[in-house]
Amino acid sequence: MTGADIIGEYTRCALPGDNILRGLAAAGVDLAALELRWRHDPHLVPRASRVEYFGNRHFEFAGDRHGSIGALVFGVLDEARRLVDLCAWSPPRSPVLWLGRGSMLGAEQAFGPRMRDEIHVHRTPLGWLRNNCRGLVPIDPISAGDLLWRARPLLAEDQRHARELRAKTTRPPAKIMFRAAA
Image (cartoon, rainbow, N blue to C red; front, side, top):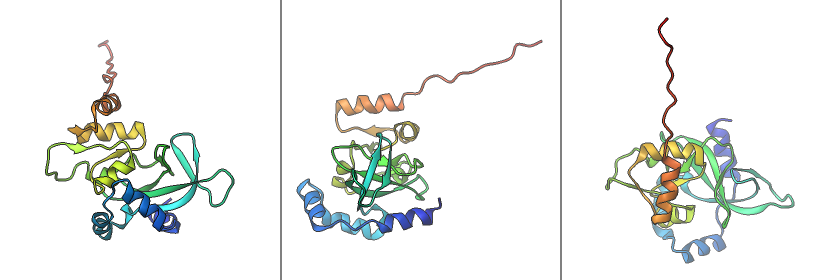
């Protein structure tokens, strides 16, 4: 699947309706600030669709299928700002990926210039939206761990979140072998 295919699926999702926008505003999201940001980066605009979760790591677009749920859908960029995946989020569930190619929301910010040394890591897309899409939201725990480790120092939401991030970014020692000289 190409970037154009991903964009096509993303644009088939509906723009968020007034009820979604009111809900985001009531949750502390500054919609005026986000609108300015979305003009420069339209893939950050959350869209709305019906999805079906498969476990806690994957979703499929579901249309009107029985068991589908409403979700916000985000474009997932990689560190080079390429659209590589889509993310669905339907609170209280965790965000999940469509193709499994992405790792987090905000990955394009991981290695860019920063005003502060640390980069903010959010638990949920709501925290990220409240922060005007600045920072990171890990989605895939395996691929996000390596990227988080390389993007450090990280700013967690609280002490418990810091412990969670430490567990995700702790690397086991490399297995190193050698052959004895003959």
